[in-house]
Image (cartoon, rainbow, N blue to C red; front, side, top):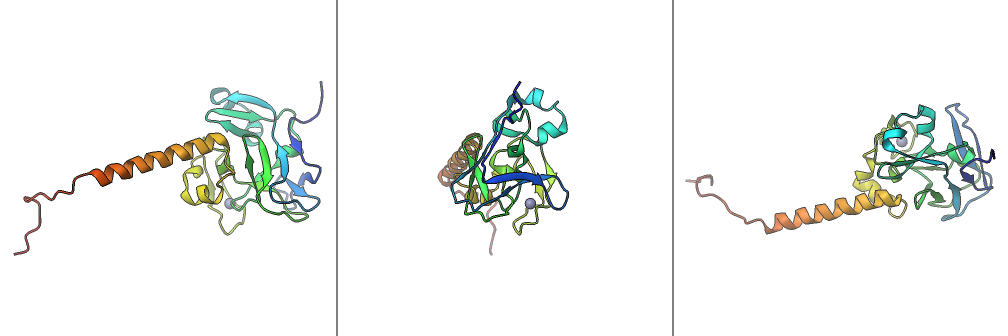
Length: 194
Ligand SMILES: [Zn+2]
């Protein structure tokens, strides 16, 4: 059986332990331009009911690819060392591609925001990414935050984008309903000013 990792990491990057000893990360070896492909995730797809019984390590390295489907790397490779940041320099292109959201300098750690892929509570944690924009806690509901929807427009996984679009459509329907509601003040409850 081949030992080639199921993920791809561009030759412009390497996976290595983080300087602070808190795990692994991927780092640029040369400048990377905005829009360049950085990594492609791969592996075995699990449905939620089976996925939640996998060991913690396998779950933490996976990526959610559909409403209830998760891609788990087998075997694990450097491309699977991508971490979360609340101020990421990379975003998703489709379900499994990772691209630079801006130009990246030599030696930068390349991260994306898990809000771009996650809608389920399988990998929630207190975040210490250190970004000014750090939200402190990363959850499966972060995709609902309007400021993230705006900042990461075009970099959400398709299944997350569908949810965002549905949410917005619901919001618009609600607003239309509110505008149509008759403005009526009951004479009984209207305040008396005499
Ligand atoms: Zn953070």
